Image (cartoon, rainbow, N blue to C red; front, side, top):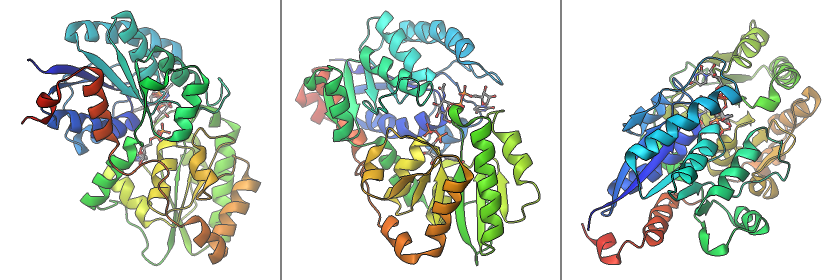
Length: 376
Ligand code: UD1
Ligand code: UDP
């Protein structure tokens, strides 16, 4: 019997990180022929991630354009992804998350009549336009999917509420924890010169809903914290989105303990998280990684589709108003008891074995004979 072909679609930085363990598990399996389709919705953000995980795409659509709009990107991506799927004719297509790449890949797979498997299925805020456009992307991708890899029991419950059949939902943990463990083991240097005597606050921000006034509010908060805490340095690897970079670089200019740098390769970013005292972020992935590293994470948003860490007290929503961000950060920097409560170390998002569960579930779904799965 020939191997089953699995096409893994990747477009952006977080997808490369979260799909890397799946690609690796499929490559190591005895029954799968793993192919990687890169939409390159991101370019310089995603290439170092592929290098880090030694993933060489089989097809690269090279779609990123500076300042791309949602409509333009989607319109260019659909025929390109559809042609790639038709060219490969895989037994199954798989993608992770809630980006344009994932929504388009789910739709193109559906049009090609090839089953689509959704990694990180079932995350919901319950508001179709928040976060925009990710909530709609994941709802739409979910309803086009044949298999749903829910990272947590809450995510599975969300899918059941939407009428997805239980048989097609598998709770796997989040593959980001698999990737994180791998990177943490490699113990890479941060690659940025930090003052070893100072505490570190790590910052990232990129979400569309934070463009404009919210990102300016985040910058004002960081400037105030810089002035209030002379023993703290701030590291801000800035996302290349043109709505973020110039604002952050402009607002942070002249603050001597705020280091604004280009995005860090994954190994360096994980090292920076490990070195940090706490993290301010609007990132989905960082919300999942920080608790696993025992780092308090203050979420620069008003809502989250990742309620587990908030419920267990290791993450907190602080919004984008300077008042809230400064108050919560200052509390953690000044009150050791409050800090310890949030720095407990918890891993509500997985145990590092999600990719193995995903691979095994795909084999079951494709009726790969157990003898073939065990061979090798
Ligand atoms: C995208 C996803 C978002 C995800 C984020 C992860 C959509 C609609 N948005 O947002 O869900 O959380 O990625 O980072 O799918 N750019 C570069 N180089 C890069 C990447 C981006 O220059 O490597 C710049 C380009 O000008 C590009 C712009 O950023 O046009 C926006 O990129 P895009 O992928 O459309 O949106 P993100 O904000 O990155
Ligand atoms: N990340 C990285 N380098 C950076 C900033 C983030 O490697 O300079 C990683 C981070 O560890 C996480 C992922 O990128 O795994 C999150 O990506 P992003 O915040 O762009 O997207 P989101 O998770 O919000 O979709």
